[in-house]
Length: 174
Image (cartoon, rainbow, N blue to C red; front, side):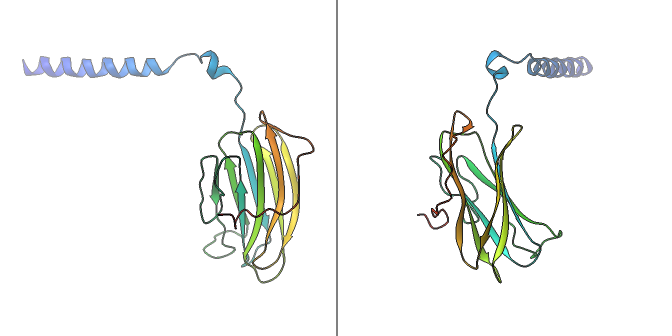
């Protein structure tokens, strides 16, 4: 009798496993087939060496994101590079991304946390799976924060003419 109970329990577990597996295999619903906007990705890079440069980003309705607070509700900092400290590569870079693209103003600032002199930083901003929004360079000095670019997005698209290079603090905001 014990062997029959074990057989039925095993078959029952297998049945429920197969049913739950089949329940996950289904064609996409209409809402799943709709194109969803990609995420904005921001990357900065600078020459190899001891300089610690920081990426700061702001997004509509979100808190500022940088090394002091690496995650907001929209933006997340993926990498905080400290220069060549604890680094196994010769590459110095930081990157952040958004989860979705809410309408409103975005900002990208670069801050020279510990730099021995002025540093040229390459900045690249793009939408995953789409295209590059902007690329450029900015020079920052020791302890200096500068705006690389500010711009607006509407309906997942860059608002032409909305870009600004006028400084607006992100790191220093409260």
